[in-house]
Length: 273
Image 1 (cartoon, one colour):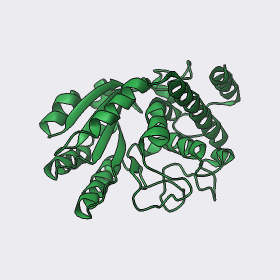
Image 2 (cartoon, helix red, strand yellow):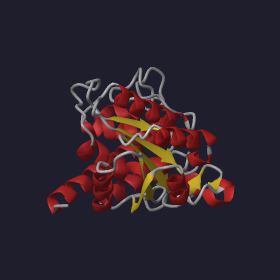
Image 3 (spheres, helix red, strand yellow):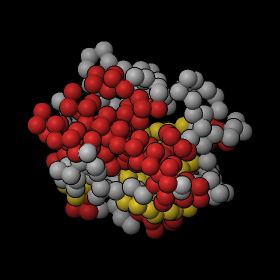
C-alpha cells in the first residue's frame, strides 16, 4: 500500500474513533470497546473496499454491509458520518429520543444502514440471505458482515455458515472481530468457540487470518476474498478491544460503558495527539 493511502486511512480511522468517543460520551451509554476494535476494518470497507455512494444510499448495485455485532453501532455510525451519509455532528444524538442513531442499527432510520441488527446471530443470517438473493437475481454486488467473537458462541451463527457454504456464496465475506473479550469476561472463559479457522474450514469456508489493525493485511485479505470462487470467505481479524484509547485497551469493563467527562477528555486528547 502506498504511504499516502496508508496515512489517509490511519487519519480517517482516528476520526472514526473520535466519533465513537463523542457519541458514547454524549449518550452516557453504549459500547465503545468493540466499536474501537472493529474501526480499522470498517474504515477500510467504507473508504476503499465497497462499491457505495453516500449520495444514493439505496442504489441497487451497491455492496452491502451488515453489522451482526449490532451493539457496536457507534462504529458504524461514525464511519457512515465520516463517509458523508449524514453530518458528523449528529453522532452526539446517539441513543436519544427522536434520533436517527439508536442503540442498535435501524435500516428504517439511518442512511447507509443495510440491515437492522442487535439480536446476536441475526446479522450474519441476514447477510447470507442477501448474498443468496444476489446470486438468484444475477447481481454482482458483494455482501460483508462483521461478527463478534462472543457472538460466535450463538448457534445461529453456525447455521448461517452452513447455509452460506451449502449455497456456495462466494459473494459473502464474514469478518470475525476477535478481540478476546465479551460482556461477561474473556471469551475463552465464557464459552470458548475456538478454533475458528478449523471450524470455518470444516463448514466450507475459505479462511484468512490477519492482524485487524494492519491496513496492508486488511487490504490483502479483502483482495484475496474477491478471488475465491465456489465458497464464502471468512476473515478472522485479531484485534484489541478499545484500540486507540490506551486506558480502554484490553479492558472488559469497556465493553458496554461510556466515558465520563474526565475519561472523555483524556480519550480525545490521546486521539488528537
